[in-house]
Every structure is written in structure tokens, then in C-alpha cells.
Image (cartoon, rainbow, N blue to C red; front, side, top):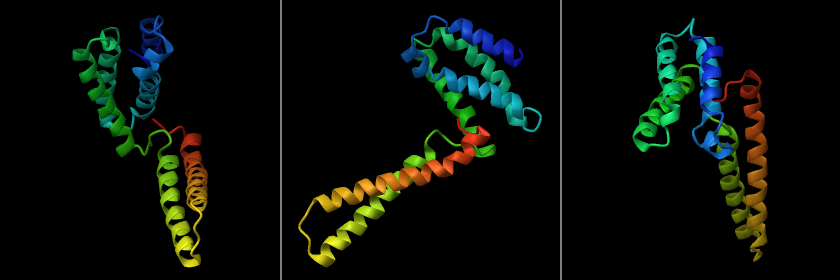
Length: 156
């Protein structure tokens, strides 16, 4: 089955899905995996193997309401996704934004705590301002780092 046939089959199988069900089953990520597997099939033996697994995942879509089918589906889906993260340099969505936001909160919160201790300030608003500034700075820096991956379409 080529990529267009796979995408048509997914569209046929998911035509009556609600948006929440479509998102819950990560169909858009499955479509991205199919396209990226096709793009890397010439260079990667694992991607050649994964092409057959992706066809099996497509066949399982109608049965995903049942937990006995959904659990193996999700395991296989995550295995393929992990392959792209490790072997092809893909990242999860908002990977750097989340990571640097947390680091920014921690660093600026510690910095504002030190300022409070040094200057013997009593205002709790300073801590809140530090945490907020750390969140904003970390998110902006993380978004900047993700920009490269977004341009290369290396986010799964």
C-alpha cells in the first residue's frame, strides 16, 4: 500500500469520528508517522519494518474502542514514535518549551529568593514575579530552540 492509499483508508475509517476521539487516538500523529516513514524508507531498515506495522495500525482503527485492541495499538505506535526520536532526531511537541519553562521558573525563583534574603524583603509578590518571569523567559527560549525543528518538520 502506498502513502496515498494509506491516507485514504485512514480518512475512510475516521470519517465519522468526533474531533475529541480523533485527537484521543492520535490519528494526526499516525498520519505524520506514515509520511515520515515513507520519507526515510530508503535510508533506514527499521523504517522499512515499521511500514508493515503502520499498515497493521491502520487496520486496527475501527476496533480501538475496545481496550484489548487499543493497548497493543498504543504500544506499537509509541515504539515507532520512539524510533523517530532516537534514530532520526525528532522531538515531541513543545519539548524545549516545557523543559526550559520549568528551568526558568526554578532558576528565577531561586534568584528572587536570594534577593529577598539579601535585602530582607517581606513581599511574597517578588517570588510570584520571579516565577512568572522565569516561565516567560524559559518558554520564549524553548520556543526559539524548537523553531529549527518546526521548520524541518521534525516534531512527532
